[in-house]
Length: 307
Ligand code: PSU
Ligand code: MN
Image (cartoon, rainbow, N blue to C red):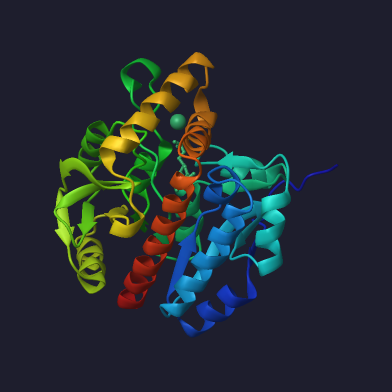
């Protein structure tokens, strides 16, 4: 196959996103790694659909981002979301390989880092996910630190999460975010959450109690000429949480299993999430879906306040 010397970027907006851009409506980016690598079928499909509906109900337009056959999609049609859950050989894309998947016409799901890049190129400033990647436990040996942290430092998108995934070393993750100048803001609480749990045992560096205050803070950063993203930590609703002490038991077991099986690199996070799903008899998935839904609602409210 011959390739053009100067290839153009194959980027496609969903009908709904294209219409929203024309009328200047608030948009919320959604990632796809959580669909393909973060949750089993059919929970992942149910999550992806319900999260889009929640964004619409809150007055914004959802833009789920993924690479399908080398095309960067900003917003997926309903049948493409279903298609994504059935594809095989879907790459897990970060800053390092987003362009590779496009150039090589592959399928790829975007992580937090890659979704931030795509959202920013598409003029979308708010993004909802489950939990960001961060500094892994034992990183002093493995050097495993998610590219999500570097992207938060570089790309001006507000990322709404339920905190870093609790499988990580949360104190070290907060240290790196501070060093890289990323504001960490917990929504409506002083306690920094830990994904499946409302508390990590750490206090949040910053805290704000309304979507308007979050939008205002990000606008003030841009007035000052400060580039980069912001991490919003939105504690999982009380009824859906699994307490930290209980989660730690499953996390330790999953980490021991990963160690024994020599899991490394990009597969670490998907392996641990899947292992914890089995160790909790599916309870962790229920909580994971609930927290993404909760984040989608807050992200839509922030996007509305940004307009
Ligand atoms: N949130 C979830 N489940 C996930 C992820 C986030 O609830 O699976 C994904 C995101 O795409 C995030 C990635 O960027 O996990 C982190 O992977 P790593 O630790 O390999 O950087
Ligand atoms: Mn990693």
